Image 1 (cartoon, rainbow, N blue to C red):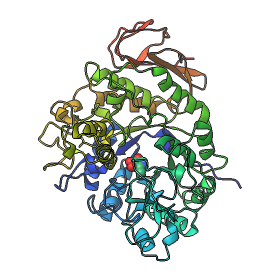
Image 2 (image 1 turned 90 degrees about the horizontal axis):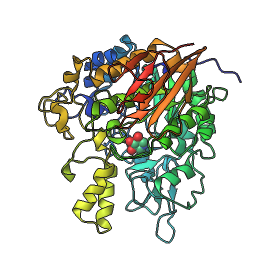
Image 3 (image 1 turned 30 degrees about the vertical axis):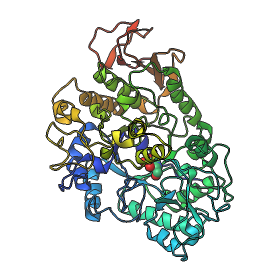
Image 4 (image 1 turned 180 degrees about the vertical axis):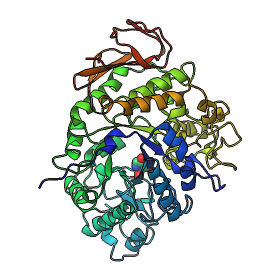
Length: 544
Ligand code: NOJ
């Protein structure tokens, strides 16, 4: 079977991820909303991004903030109405921006009518994974990714249901053709309304070996590796392509925990279409200590491994930060002395790869992790589960809170810092999560008129990327893979080569750089050919 060539706007665009709950509240309830996104389209258009990926906007009890969906074809009233969604899609389109929806199809909320039907023993019982216990205990040894057992036995039921995440997120049984048909219909519903595609949550784990046997190591990473790429994954994705994506000008981006570049390459092989782009976990899983003396070599190697592994035919994404992680500058950069330089250097890295770059809301300002002081200020179900399990294991409050703080996803979810106002211009009332106190100086308004700001630099990088196909398609090569501190790479396209040099440490570095003139840097000239200043980033002009 031959497939028509697909449009490739999604290779050329910069994706900007919006966490709707935290972006902009116009309705005055302390929670971000869809109209808030529409309201800020001029800001986003000015930034130059071409795709907005919205974390889930569907109806949900919000235990995992929408990744626990209770109706795939509705809009969560917390975020607005279907009219608001239609308006956002239309207004974004006028500015050449496409809306991408995040959809969690591995599981539904237990509040979903499908699960409620299954729970009541209805005709949808087999839409989920139900198993008898083993001597009263869970059917296998899998642990929930969030901690604790991955099986729950509802009161009054004699079986357990599987949940890889929270117990409120029951895994759908994709073996059922009816489940798959219902999912396809939900996706077509949104594509017919004009969305530009989907980010498919943890899509690599949708197919499970039906015997659901024990694993040697049930912790999250090995469990992901065990389940990912299950026996019918390719079949399910080909079917989804045929039933859904093939009929629209859209993009299908798979969040892909547990797969290496070789397995991922199969999922994005244009000769056997399943997904268009992979969102891998190697960078997501890295958690170095801020400003610490971590080894940059494995970090750099991830870029090379994925670029080589996916090849020039498939397509990759660069995701270094998102709603599940600490802020990019807090994880990999330096929040203190070199805050501005390191934020700009990391954005240079993200925006000059051969892969679609993903910028998470606030990264363009250098937003940092939040100094939470109270457990009550946390919202993340994963952090709260971590706290509870620590307490159950005997830890005191301080130790359990420290453990929750170290991993909480709330760092990325604090309200967007629009200005220095009481609620950072996010809302007129107290927001659902505290505002980072540094909004007094770190905010969009303060950076808007400043040509040296991180915001101005991000705009320049996005404009650079759009100015020359070399930045989209040019071959990537790491020139100094063994260097502990610097990342120097080239992008080559149709006989022209451009060099990017990044000092990923807050100390001077010795290097050898080309004579080409510098087009963009986070430092002012003159530029030495044999040295980089702390966190210096340079993009050299392409030459033959
Ligand atoms: C990955 C999402 O990014 C995360 O936020 C969510 O909790 C899990 N998948 C479960 O849906």
